Length: 67
Image (tube, rainbow, N blue to C red; front, top):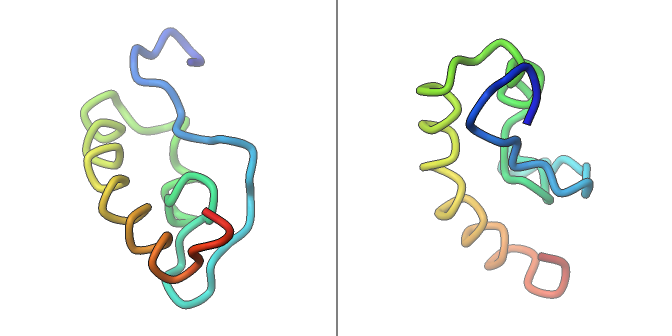
């Protein structure tokens, strides 16, 4: 958590972009979401968090031994 935000970053320090999806293989965010995270308000951060489980599941299907 930074800047007094109540919504933590989903970053897990595995920072590789998955070209087919455009998502980070670690946190499943797009490069735009990663870059803008510090500017997002808590509501925007929660919207991103809400998308991550489905994205991570898709990454698991595509990279079963890595995620």
